Length: 51
Image (cartoon, rainbow, N blue to C red; front, side, top):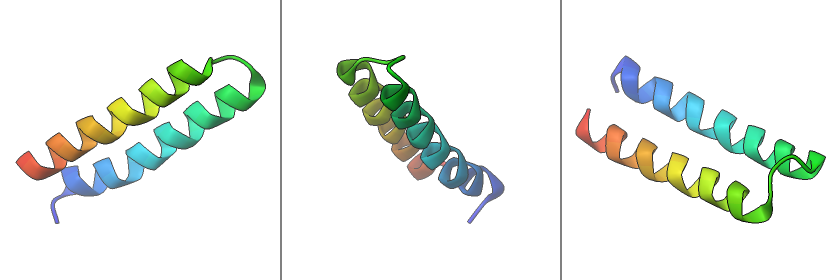
């Protein structure tokens, strides 16, 4: 596993946790939270498989 893949595996859960925390604080709407989580997973998947 390359360093880039390790970074993706570390950063993606942090982004997801941050989005959920912002949702619980009332900063993000549910749609924005779902979008942030979905897109971060999709981007991480594409980048992980192309590394």
